[in-house]
Image 1 (spheres, chains in turn green, yellow):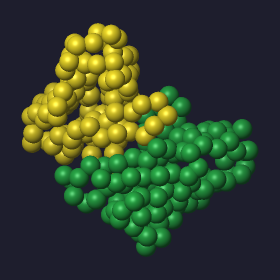
Image 2 (image 1 turned 90 degrees about the vertical axis):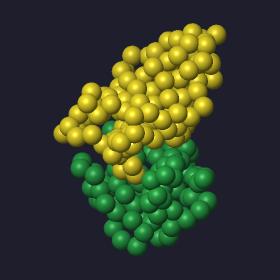
Image 3 (image 1 turned 45 degrees about the vertical axis):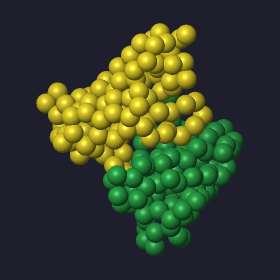
Image 4 (image 1 turned 30 degrees about the vertical axis):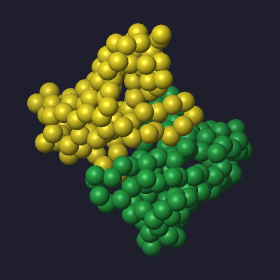
Length: 115
Length: 109
């Protein structure tokens, strides 16, 4: 199993500022993903965090807005840049191995409110 | 574009009964369908994964079916308990998941 922690757990930010969210896993994992859950909505994949290379973004998400780092197999950061109220969401980190018999795990999420 | 749809109406059910949730998808059948539980303020917790070539999967009181003809997965909670009250999410794929909107289940004593 994998235990995931995220920091911060929640934050309230001003419009135009940036926030970096950290995701720490207690074991080395092959795959790390970042998801967003807007109020009352389901989860939407933002990007795949690739170790040693640039993240792979899903349609509608761009690196300038959501830069991602993944320096090693246990850690990743997601930055929400130049925030607007529309960015108010829960941001979740998810991890898994390349073995599809393994469970995919989600972190507890970071609740972001932009004023 | 591919869609994955769940009943948005909350399912209210009496303790001891079986709750049945529906997940419908469009376009091609995914190789995997997954079901997660999400409690308020928490990340999703994995429950079951069913592969395209599997008809049914069970885990304790949970059962999932996968009908590629109907393009549908059913999720059953048998002998439901108040502790089963949560939102249940269906997702297609593995790793890069496409989630449904979720169905809230409320089990009353």
